Length: 378
Length: 195
Image (cartoon, rainbow over all chains, first blue to last red; front, side):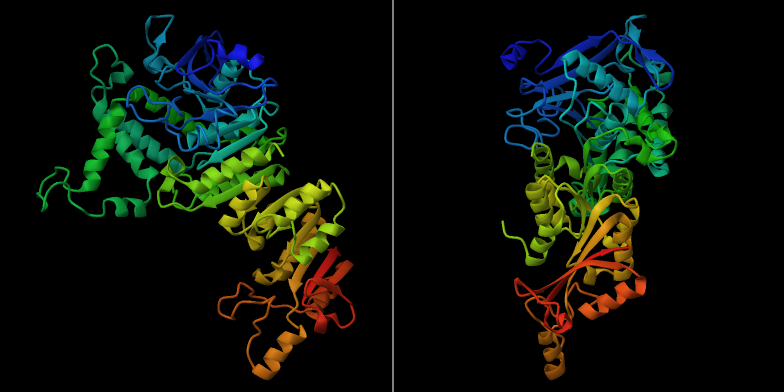
């Protein structure tokens, strides 16, 4: 049986890495090669290779979608959606999740070694786009022998990749699930990212990105970037409910600049723990890729035109308290899909958790994804 | 599977393999019936998130949206039928919604409860109260029906706009009833229109 021989194949399983010759032609005009891609696969490809699901991760995400993170020891970041008995189930699906290029979890990025020099790329790494990330994923799928995707699924920046897939490879995508995402980065989105980038580049340790040799990393700048971004992932109501104006481990204000409030302490913790698992230069590159993202712009200003070659089914989900990629952005996509006559579903789910809702407990989300995926088999 | 009588009637009439937009599709009962029995390519628009989730969980293509505002984004003549069942009376501008249906679909089904049914008339005439009946089960203050309409009102609108009636059906209880005096005796009306 094909699936039996595939299970012995070193290309499949947890903690895999592929070095693909490339070169990968990038939107900037530069070429990248060889391209390293760190990834995981779960489950077995069936005989006709029709059960493949690609999961795309968010800005600071990684390939450990359903397995323990090697640095933090936390369970897979989308264990609520991907795993045994879940809507995306290794018992039924062959699941692929790859670290995006530009990131720092094993795929080619500013922190990885440039084979030409033996040194980290740092800021000499070419600027990449969301489409470039998708092209790298397509190279990986070629390497894995996957021609068509039963589904591509992503939330936030993962949703940008998922939505880009049928525009770049219309013949390779049967269905597409885009959660808490958008078809373009807004001025406000870009503005928040610029705050983060400036915080990193203002850190004296950043040194133009060449900080890898001595271990003195721009941790203060990266932590501030993370703190600012983290606020955008939560809702005002969620913050109020979680912290309110409560003080941190004290009975009264100190009349100083220590973290008096619980919310300050929480954000500082978020910033500090982020620094341990993420590379500052990668943060610059990936936020840049997101800011350049605008699917309509790549198709003569018409979002509807982007999908005319695709016959994929689409499912879009937004959350009512998400102000980073609000429901209106998903509606724009739905209207464009309707205009082109695509099979599209869209629902705004209710959650108190803001943008982060897509990663948190949401039975309705599981129900929608499960039904949508099974609907394709009817 | 047992469909609501007006939906069963629409399901019987739709031609197999047609492209259908069900506006106010609820949990997708009609769409699922059309898909399974007649291989219809059905799409839905529904305002309630729970209903949309239920419909998508059935494998249907349903978009959360508002008939009053979101129909404008569908291209002209992109469907064989646009269906508006039990939703007309809940829209802010029923006339504009029907115009949109007839722009998007080559034909449009419109079904609605007949406010001039004799039971409602009696309730108003003798009781002086807004009718609360099997078809109109809500009180005046919590009903979603903001534009009550009668069979004759609807016919007048059709005449005024110059639309064509390709079919009309009337229901009393769960059964079809005669066209004679429908404005008095029909609890429910289903019209098939085109521009």
